[in-house]
Amino acid sequence: MLIQSNMKMAEVIHLDYHLLPIVSRFGISLGFGDKTIEQVCRKQGVETNFFLEILNSYYNKDYFPQKHLQGFSLELIIEYLRKSHDYYLHTKIPLIEDLLRQMIDSFQGIGSETLQLINGFFVEYKNELTVHIDREEEKVYPYVFTVEAAFTSQKPTREIVRLIHAYSMEDFENEHDNVEDKLFDLKNILIKYLPLPVDLQLCHAVLVELFRLETDLKDHARIEDKVLVPKVKYMEKWLIEHATV
Image 1: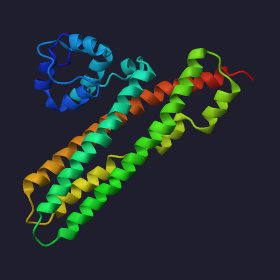
Image 2: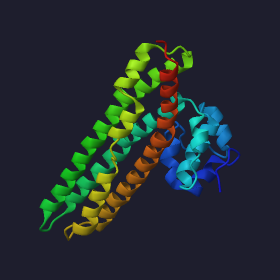
Image 3: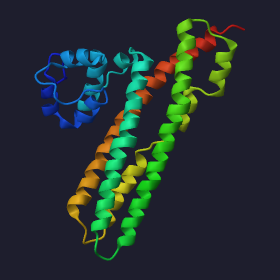
């Protein structure tokens, strides 16, 4: 089943509540009544087809319209990726931090050192994720827009070729670290080595949020690797082949 533009937005949330943060990244808040997806998108100034492709990519893991997504502008794609970054750093990470703090504060037994290690592990992960995001925001995305501008002008120059040789999407792929791998390690520590007694409800809440963040990051990386990278690589190739000598 695919989500269609004539479906009511409320139906989408009932269909899969995990889509709530995805919807919110497009600036769409609750309170949309019985409006359809198309009506809500039109009111919010959101590109309906792009919205649907992103929603369906998250809703159905077997659905990934790589070619369709590559047809959308880099501005649309990167705007969405940037909103995802904002969600990770300013919503999801602070939520997990708060739950971890509550879990550690509630602990009364022997083995609190393990909990402190878990917290330290997460702080280290947060720093790595922040560095990863900053690199994309400050280096990769500006580079992408520079390449797109040169490609759109259809007037490739030696300067843009030098820029591509200095840093290309192939370099981005090589340095594109897997930020979700460390989350798997953190989940493993919580599942296997958490000392007792501890507030299990808080522990479960932390684990659920870690699983959700891991899934979201994987989907985010999929859009970068399967959509952004090939689209920009095509532009790089054309610019090099048609550059003035």
